Length: 219
Image (cartoon, rainbow, N blue to C red):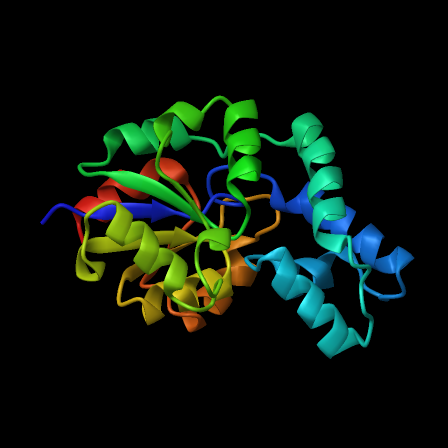
């Protein structure tokens, strides 16, 4: 059976979570949220910016400015243009997969084009970038992954999602898809985060992207 591999973007294809969340933590600090980089990553990685604003209000009691989303997008683009790098082995891994691929991210398409383009791997996924802005509900709801599968002509049972966040893994399982937890980004520690990702629904955890083709072929 040919599997559609659906990649998350940040922290899976590009090593962007640490610089982006360092910026987010500074922004939140400046607006009255007492939070460090580790808590920022644990709380917000994998979520849309709209959901981040909702959590800031609900969990921390801080209503962020009305321009929070466009301002963070602007600032993040500036940081990532300077600091983002590709995850080691992505091009070889995608080339070794036996079936089609796409990207489904909580970030907007422009951000994916920036990070994938800056790191030289946009050509691997051109025309197959899907954003949470295209669906009603973002992760951990299944909407984005179901939409991506539909656009690629695949049924959920023939899809495997590669994610680095619990919210993304929960979304994959809610969509009826197989799920792989990736710990190769700089914001993840394999030993520390392995159980967290398994608890979120990962079928398997891996930390070297070059291992992905053999894992998928064995599924």
